[in-house]
Each structure stands twice: as C-alpha cells, then as structure tokens.
Amino acid sequence: MLELPDADLGDCPAAASDLAEPVVTSDELLRGKLLHVFRDVVDVPGRGHGVREWIKHPGASAVVPLFADGTVALVRQYRHGPRREFLEIPAGKLDPGEAPEACARREVQEETGLIVGKLTPLGPLYPAIGYSDEVIHIFLGEDLTLSETNEDDTEVVRPIRLPFDQAVRLAQTGAIADMKTVAALLRADALLQSR
Image: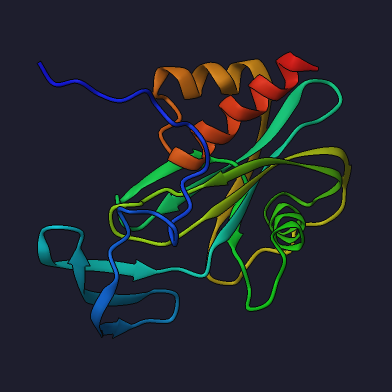
C-alpha cells in the first residue's frame, strides 16, 4: 500500500519548491491581443526534460455584489469559447498597472451600474493551472449604490438580481457553471456564515 506523508497545507512557494521546473528554453507561439501562448522546455526534477505549453494572462478581478437586502447582482453573458450563455459575477481583466481592487470596482460599475462602497478580499483563484498563469482576485462587494452602466463596446451583458441564497444553491447544483462564480459565491457564503 502506498503511504502518504502527512499533508502540509501551508502556502506552496513556487521558487523554493523542490518540485519547481526551471525553464531551459521558451518559445512564444502566439502574441494575441489578450493572451500570449508559449512552449517551454523545462527541467523536470529527477526526470529530464519536459515540454510545457502555457498561456500568459494579465490577471483579472471578480466581485460578488451583495445588496443589504440579501440579494446579489449577477450578469448573463454569452461566452464564445464554449458557445453558450452563462450566469456570472461581474469580472474582467486587469489593465496594465491596474490594482485588483480598482479593476473590481471598475468592472462592477461597467457591467451592472453599481458603485461598490466596501470590498472584502475573498482570495485568489487560479482557474486553469494546467495551462495558464491567470489569477483572478475575488472580492465581496457591499454598500452598493446605483449609477449607470458603462459597458465595454466589445461585450454585451445583462445584469440580473436574485436572492443570494438562491445564487448559492444554483452554484451548488451546477446550474451556475462558471468556475469563478461558483467559487466566489461559495467563499462569500462561508464568509457571511462566519459573521
């Protein structure tokens, strides 16, 4: 029987890890408007060389906008990759040099017309660790006031409002299938339960 050591649940620092894979060579395969694709040859500890194809992403922020009455603002949006519509929390990529908090506030206002008074960090998410360096900074947004939407010219979103408990149930049952939204709703629910 395979014996496993006790779990070390501390942070896993990449640079100090004995599992790190130093890059031997790196070739850029595609430089797109948003994404850059690379093929790296890496030194796999104790195993020789391996090939890693990965996507460089600028990072993003996402917010669970929670009203004082216990409802949440979500957006309906069509996503080209999977060719379907999703129910999501407001989110978007970081602009160059932009702080995650500033991006979070901007995206909520652009997509829902809401101004967030209070942001509480819910931690980072790495949605595609097998092939991307993307990190999404997740927040709970409270003390909301209504403004005007300022939609991006290249996307169409439809804001909706529903009870937070219903949104959490939809995330738990798979009716909400977007990973960042599922994780953020569950993290927000855990935080709210602990208050």
